[in-house]
Every structure is written in C-alpha cells, then in structure tokens.
Image 1 (cartoon, one colour):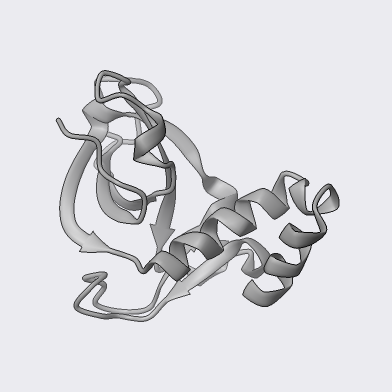
Image 2 (cartoon, one colour):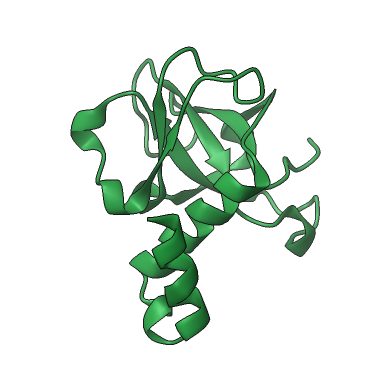
Length: 132
C-alpha cells in the first residue's frame, strides 16, 4: 500500500485483526502525519478520527467540516485532534476524499496546542489564536 498523504480521508477498520477491536466499526479519519517523513515500509500512520456526534466534540480541539465534493461528507462532521492516534496501515482503506491544506494545518495546530507546544513558541500561539 502506498502511504496516504497528510489531509487524506481514510477509513479505519477497527473490527478484529490488530487490537484494540471495536466490533462492527468502520470509521473515517484524516491522515495528519507528513507522509514524506516515513518510508513506505513503515507500517503505521497517524490519524485524527472524524465524527458526526457533536456530543463528543471538544471545540477547542476539533475542526468543523461542512459537506463538500472534496471531503465527501454528507453532513457536518468534526475532525477530533484530541482523539488522534497511530494505527496500523493494515487497518486503513484509502478514499479519494481530502481536506484542504488550511484545514490540515488547523488540525496539526490544535494537536500542537493540546500537547503544549504553543507555550514554547509565540508563533504557534499566534497561529493557534487564528485557528480558533
């Protein structure tokens, strides 16, 4: 499998194979790593899950996606930076859908903000303020 690039929307299969198992769940996610940093042989990928369920959205760490032909969403969805995780490429199915470069930057900034990098860099703090 060719590594999906950052901003690609993929489907993660949580049903069996590699733990943790989540029965009967295929979930969309956005690739947030920079595919140029990892060789094709590297078998994991960093993703942020997507949801339509606003009850689990923490707005400070989520990006709202309105439906578009580019992202393939049928209704408003949220990218959850605070649920980002590394998954095996064996669980990933690619799609032709993507988010914009600006949306990918917002997800990455929210993730950086969540783990404390804006406290180190005034530039990141300024960028995080722009994305709120």
